[in-house]
Image (cartoon, rainbow, N blue to C red; front, side, top):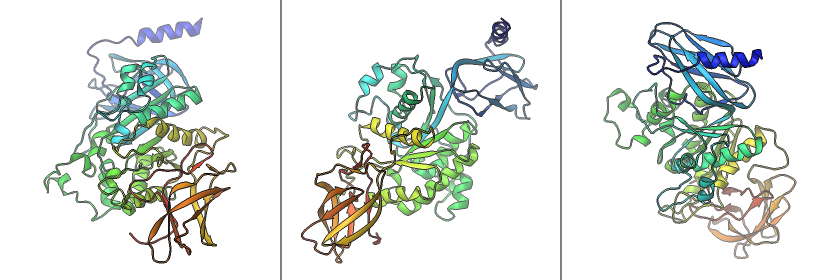
Length: 475
């Protein structure tokens, strides 16, 4: 009885009045999801000049925040295990209530157009299976989405626009397909609320998502930042201008509490593979530092095949290789390969469900302790040459590679003349035996290393291998 009276009293105290002086960032809204079993940050502004109190219906404990001279206040709230809906009451003399708050798993989702592409697809570029997913969406399913509006800025801003939406057909249709399928798989398997905080911009380069301190300190003389000080004209393409999207779409979110990050970006940086390894490493370190989450998992998508203006060019191969190499320098990271789902006619593949699921598999295995599957792509390990064949060894679980008894395409083989010829691959345990009778003494193998190719090699769980090469020949 006392517990019931306590909840009633909290509800009465939390009644909202129009014109409340306390204000919150837009992403602290009704329907939001907070990270479970964590000390989550919440902040806002007040013009009352006095302290701010925060109370939640999952504890009933009152927390106090003292605003600074600018009126900004910050508090930390301990969250329980997954559950809800709850309410949060914020009072600076007048009261504000956040309703329908869930506690669960929260992931930050960012990148360029392949992350931005909604479940409803782009014009003439659909997301496969979207109709069933949209029409099947129900508000009672505890998936919530918050998409931050596009905003670039020369300096970090404090506020951005974007509020949390329930899992309704209209909201799902307009949500990032990759992020939504990721969240949907997590929710189905974990059976807890899942929230996705999405901040992306089509065509953006990775350096636009990195702060000025990191760009100037880690990449001296590689990027001109004079425009940030008004010493040069602002570049016309704002979403490819260093630091501007960090300032407009990341800085206002700091230090929101999330479990981890998923990232789908790279096409714009495709011509700078070696630099990209360093950029992605520094991006992740920056995010972990600023959001006070040093062990945040980071899962990213390897770019899919696309012909660009030269389908036989090696540019994408070198870039995909750089993405794979970044796994070695970014702790607690994973990569979802997409070599099997590229489309010749569009840079935005329709199979976003596969992309979201593969990211989710990585999280479920590495962060949520799921057993029974091997979520990583088969990875090239070593090669030896004998009897006119290349025997390529892979890192893969005990269920080995697939498919067996099938001629695999996408392989190329070269002799000492460094001229590559199409070759056939055959799975044998953890190896693929590659050969072409026209190359009797092979010294190098490449697999789908060009801009356009179709993946044919998988592990036993349907996860494709990515592009690779056995040589170290220069660009």
